[in-house]
Length: 225
Image (cartoon, rainbow, N blue to C red; front, side, top):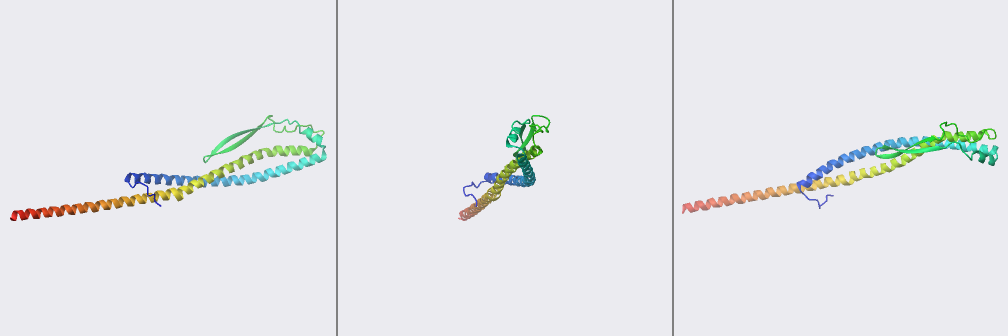
């Protein structure tokens, strides 16, 4: 429905036409952005699903090895073996911009350059199941970080998709139709004013012609007398 408070002038009509052209361009760009975000989001969801299955399988295997290690070793020995780790992991967080969405990028490094130096105990009094459990957790750590990065990226992209979708709907169903209605309203008002002006000019012309005709008749009567 047209806004009846709009000023029906040619300047306002020009402004609204420019606004409509800009809005349509913005609508197209937002639709393209939404579609590309959806495409990348679906790719991330597939990667996230595969990573989650891999991480869950790795954690399940590590838990199984820990259970076997606890079954074959006294609890005190297991606690002493894991009490003082020799390796430390440092996590670095950066950001990467994807379609105006800042998604996190996780990288990690260890305190000791040798990534295999993960055992904080001697092998003489521990079982191989404990070694397998520690090794399983060390192997699954990069995948766990990648999974965390992927899940956070999915959350951020989903929020951006929803925000972009609302903007597209607002432009498509509210702003563009209202602007078009206002343009139509102003155009009709200007046409109506132009027709009224033409009618007034024609009436004035007829009145002037009629007045001129009467004047000539009066002049002719004066000459005749």
